[in-house]
Image 1 (tube, rainbow, N blue to C red):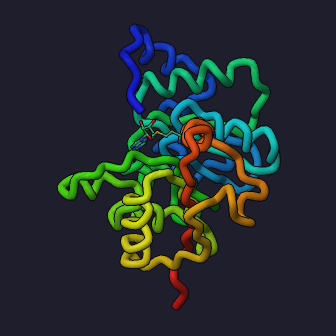
Image 2: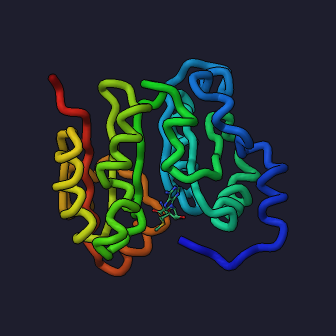
Length: 214
Ligand code: SAM
């Protein structure tokens, strides 16, 4: 998702109390940021933040970090959460490539990837958020029993992920090609893109991955 440049976006982000400005300084110490030792879950590429804000509202005992690389998109999320009382939610404007410099080993319980950019050209495969390179980054920060949950409407990206994720040393322990007509839909929180694609009648694919044991 890219939006037209908004003058002053960087300044507003720099002043926002919801955005952690030097996140790498908290590596290994995120419990201090939240003031508790509750589990930490992150969404990579949160867009305007609907999904993670709803999760934070309904699970006050979990800490959430929403990650978005584009300032203009992050600004929309900041504006949306202005009137919400969510002490368990912070935002970062960073590229997911840097996650292992921001979170220490085993500091994260769960990683959500929702409707990630498909990067359809083969030469861009390394940019896909489910590619082995990114899975190696998630491996560094997730707890041993931690999970990556991925939803997409893009069948090519999903099929690619079903091969790429196991090749990187992970097991896919849940998968569906039609989330909304499956038992896994219970408790599902919709993202902005999901709402749009579902209204267009597109099936939503979902998988969950954990590290292979032994
Ligand atoms: N998750 C939201 C949803 O489902 O409605 C937004 C989906 S949008 C297609 C993908 C988002 O991921 C975009 O806002 C994009 O800027 C962000 N993104 C893509 N690559 C990223 C990266 N490497 N690090 C952080 N954010 C990224």
